[in-house]
Image 1 (cartoon, rainbow, N blue to C red):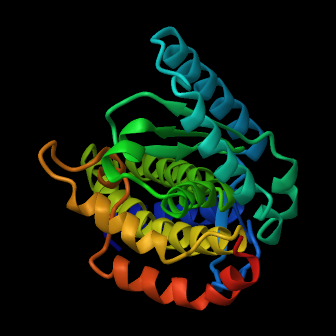
Image 2: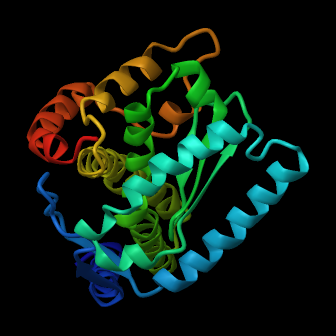
Image 3: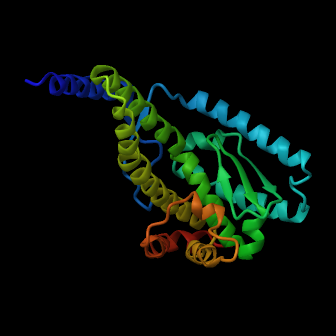
Amino acid sequence: MNSVVRKVKVATTIGLTTLLVACTALDTTSSGSVGIQRKQYMSGLVSETELNQTAMQQYNQMISQARAQKALDVNAAQTQRVRTIAQRLIQQVGVFRPDALQWDWEIHVINSDEVNAWCMPGGKMAVYTGLINQTQATDAELAAVIGHEMAHALREHSREQMSQQMVTSVGLSILSAVTGSAAAADLGGTLTDVMFNLPNSRTHETEADLLGVELAARAGYDPRAAVTLWQKMGALGGGGTPEFLSTHPSPSSRISELQVAAERVMPLYEQNRR
């Protein structure tokens, strides 16, 4: 057997063993009415506690910076509106994971032209005024985007992605050491993008869409607003692609998928509408 082939096979075996040892399959959330069933693989190299601590540090830095720039919660009425919507959504997270009811949830409004919003691991959130103002978002549309971002945290998508990258990195280090090939790292980087980053980005976005729509419906917000929100953001022009869309890959079928999901949870909305 060719020595290079033998080395690659050995490295592959070691890499697969590393993957199996380092990762654990788990369900971060229940399926809900929208039926999220996918198992997630988390590496012991990335603990939930450590990730949340790191997220908290980053969050505090960003909030301190916004405060120093006098861009934090500038409009009291707008901030209260966003917090009221977020609180109604937070009250529903126990449907997907009861422990999230005990998270130290927090949300701020940052004065910026960016069309953006995010939720860090552990429940620290921000909505940018650019998203609110440029889309003229209704309460239901804000519920859709906040619920979507909360869903990423509930499903621990950041931890999952980091786990995949770290396990892949370990495997590539072994392969590079065994073959002595510098090209292994380049091939590995491409493989990571194709097998992990792109597919999982689409998977994560779909899950966040579905879970976010259900959170909104259970909180008494019309889930169909998710469709109009994405249509509004997609129609924004002049300044290029909105930041929110540039960091949230959107397949062509997204609108139709949202329409189907919204109809599925309409009974929940009818039960809880205010």
